[in-house]
Length: 348
Length: 267
Ligand SMILES: Nc1ncnc2c1ncn2[C@@H]1O[C@H](COP(=O)(O)OP(=O)(O)OP(=O)(O)O)[C@@H](O)[C@H]1O
Ligand SMILES: [Mg+2]
Image (cartoon, rainbow over all chains, first blue to last red; front, top):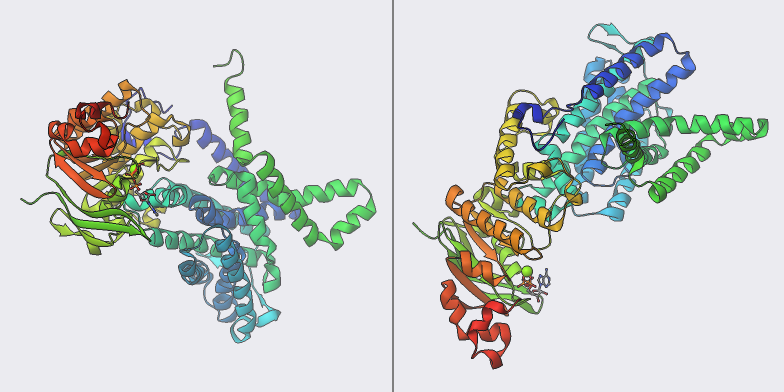
């Protein structure tokens, strides 16, 4: 336990978690997900893959909106850019997939400077609107550059072969997504416990004090944009591969809302919240579909004909409900439950 | 050697209002100086000029022999200017230790990638920073607050954390804006002791804005008095206590004949 009264060695104070339980349960969870492809049917496996990809993308937005406090509706723009930055070199020019993934991170990171610089002086609603415009400009540009992107026809992409490993099968592809998601999670957690991550939080909580501590506000906001875009781009590439087809239609604006909903439902600013929020938001439409199915075949029909609209309504609804009743998000609930458990009579 | 801080004819005007008007003052190395003056006298504005939060309309700020006019605001910390704020400016969703670690920002190097990997140099520098923070935590006697989220602490505790954060910048000059306002007698005495230790043990010069005359009279080497943006007096605490213009500024001209009351002005 960390406590003020015992003097411990300093290296032990900067570990990611000093709780053995966290490491053990985390390990079990990852192991379970690694084994899952061999037990789940294709339909259920697709949910696992979706959770992993969406979670990776949400971690990207988390760096920008959760940590640095820069609200962005442009998330889908970075996902789309990442997907095309992968698909164009790999599917059109036959580049190795590893190069594709590199470009899926680097291209959005560079483009994020273009939206980042005009956003430096903007806050709140104005920033939201600017990034919203950015998302639509990106899809417009992609459509108009059809000599490179095939325009509205899109680009088919295959499952990749990386470092001599073929990720063609569903199970292997799930493993690839798992590796990327876990690596991203660790990277984000590490950033948060180091200089740059603390600077992000400082910029979010009090920019004048942050500057007085020696933090260059513009530079760090840009760094947040670039880091976020890099991670989101990788997630976008994975999503494109998952769809086996990269097109503007495959990346609806709703994905920006979905990622914001994940952050709010999980608890804004919390990395554990991103994980919890992702699971809830990805599964929510399916749960709603099953619930509607119980109301009879007509209701289920509605779901298949208006799935996109229903998802829009659902995300909006959970955002409002959480902001109204539990602004701390699922991590807040989790902490309450834990406190209750620890303080239960006769437990200590 | 020249003075650590030299303000030469600094003026700051907000539209029509001249908040600081042609103020010159200096802080020598190893000094504890106070800035006093009635509400709205321009004390905080003066601090904002010294710490780069605001730029003077005219005049110069020379720190450690360097004209700060062309130094970007975020570089003031690296030059050795640390400060606290009158109305708490902590990172309130972060823990005490995290707040202090932000104070170490300028003495660390690692970027996004090194931080994400958290290995080798990045890890070593984090350990070194944490060691420094632990030292400050012990110095300020806030061991049991280490992992607390700052927003949950009491006002007095938050003030202490802000002091710690400013110390973590390893400043040459520490600017304290009304450090003890709202504190009880005991907390005030703790802070007075810390300020003297900061000067004596760490060799940091201190410039503080205070309304509490006890602490001003007890621990400052020199006092500067501001009134309506102008500097109206400067001297040792005892001299200032006897100064008629100062008493007039605080209490109005009618009571200037009883200057000894100055010490009770804010009771
Ligand atoms: N950013 C600003 N814009 C406009 N006016 C300002 C600004 N900052 C300060 N002022 C004005 O400048 C004057 C001096 O303010 P300042 O905060 O420096 O006073 P102070 O001496 O610190 O007072 P107090 O003892 O109440 O803290 C006040 O009239 C204030 O309203
Ligand atoms: Mg003030």
